[in-house]
Image 1 (tube, one colour):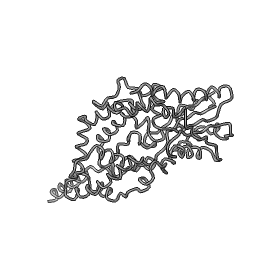
Image 2 (cartoon, rainbow, N blue to C red):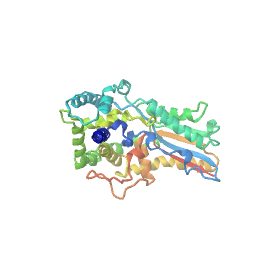
Image 3 (cartoon, rainbow, N blue to C red):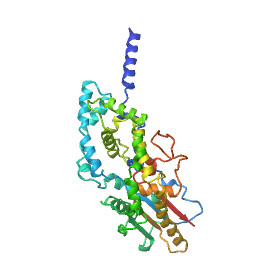
Image 4 (tube, rainbow, N blue to C red):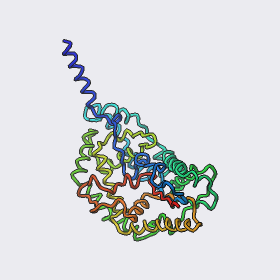
Length: 381
């Protein structure tokens, strides 16, 4: 009798622990393409090789992508429309058609619409401000002597232009954390900006809007991997109507925008996806970045060279004693992609295609164009 009791107890434990729950999984997938929180992928300049023993840093040049912001109007509309799916998931779970675990369903039930996120499109968020402030703080700790005192002629800070204030707000957060006294930030240029050169180029606008630019990402959405993922999501949540690609994209955005890298807190919406689903969705955006602002179009390398011209001139000035201690710009993910192309970094041997997903590819938008991603260059003497 005692032996039977032990067996029953062990079986009960096995059943409970074998149920997969997103809420307590040890290693959730953290790569969300260009909405990846900076803290999920960042290094630390305080431990970086840019600090050379026996050398004196004399100038820093940085190009930084803006931090976290609210979704734009179109994305926000689709996300808000998709929020009602959580009620269908709860009903599906009660009928026994949903394979999410009880806690994941409960977390979805408790999730409240973030009216701030939907009512204020494009607005810079507290998460974004802390990302920018943290980057500046670590930079100051890495180079305390160089950045200890900044006079008016010692620095240059400027954001790229944007239809809303998120880029400028990101620049303000960075500068505010860098120094304990107010520093001047130059206004954004509205024309011929070397950190946003593609904005006024008709050739780029035509290329970006060309149907062929999105051809490979659309092709991947017809691939066996993506269709299997789409079917898996449908069966996992067990709701009655078929999810569209727009629905899935909106649910993915709810997962991405509602996840914090600073607190390492994932959105309950992420429970709708397996790791393989997230990898497939990430690849769609990798293809978009590759052909819109990466190696998929040769013009992108030229735009990256324009931004790097400022780096060259900045260090040439410093070499003859007329440079800045620090020059920093805040720009867009597109510009970061273009700079990597100009530097010939993260280039795969063969172009990325929608025919299949290459797991070991070098071009990963989650790492190259994450929120607050940056290129920091240091001139040493």
